[in-house]
Image (cartoon, rainbow, N blue to C red; front, side, top):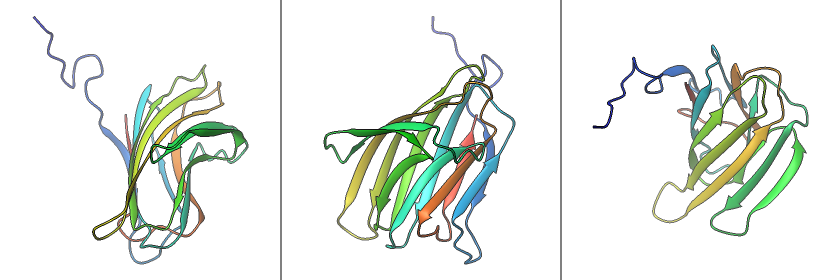
Length: 166
């Protein structure tokens, strides 16, 4: 018989560790969440760009050094990758929005491998694009205790959210 797992057994389900939401018409260029580290993290992103060009990167613990390596497959095309970047490139687009889920193994003594699925979409009928990403943060000395969503160009419109579960 299969064992039932709930919140009180083996770590159970994810719970929300923190959330940052763009509001008040300020259109921030960074959304940031700090939290108590957990071994497994899930980052959820709801990005509203309003049709303006937006270049988003994900960073950990405010590290803007060239400590991120990644591979991305954009809309079922051949994948490409780069090393020694200052953040995880999530995609550059001028559509109306994006939603993403990124899973992270967060062990202090190891680099932090991550896998993500992203969907970019337009407001009406038409364009939707899918990106699949694999990346890592090359820090093997601390756990992730904060996540930043940073706009290299553009800004986050009201309702954009960065949510961290653990």
